[in-house]
Image 1 (cartoon, rainbow, N blue to C red):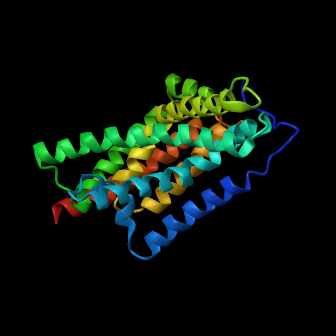
Image 2 (tube, helix red, strand yellow; image 1 turned 180 degrees about the horizontal axis):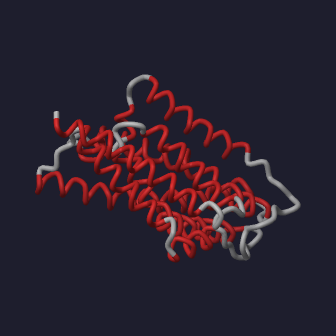
Length: 248
């Protein structure tokens, strides 16, 4: 079944909304206080476990902030079709965030290997160019058939058991399926937010709005070309920002 019109029963999901709002609050406060590095990939290649742990927590906050709003229709569906909505919704987000954590683990391994073997520099100019290149890939990805299929999977749900362990397992399984589809659809943009050293917060807002439009509304196909054009502009901005810094 494809999520379209909202079900008659609308669980408010206050705890989820509070979690999303809290995640945005922490991210914004961190950047305002000059701790934007918490939310970048640098923490994942640190030698201290405390730094790596902070990087994982920061990633989960970023993911909940950017992807949480777009997951609300499916989370409401889960809550509306179970006798234990809090437990089922928790299981759903556990499966969903587990997929994004796995994505982060793969990225961290590849990133650490690149730094160790090739001595990849992390100057602001170079990272701006890398971010621009990743955003350019994301812009091209917006217009592909696989992207459309993945977005359809993000909007597709199955019949859930009403109660018991089977309901919890089904909700977690739905979270995993949603997470895998989301990783496939949004991976380039999420990589760009990890790589960005300039404009990261603004880029996160762009990703959050775009994910919500694509997954939580019926405007998915209509926003494909405009979003690709917008992302192309963002990519050019990063390249223009990064090229002069490399020459200094």
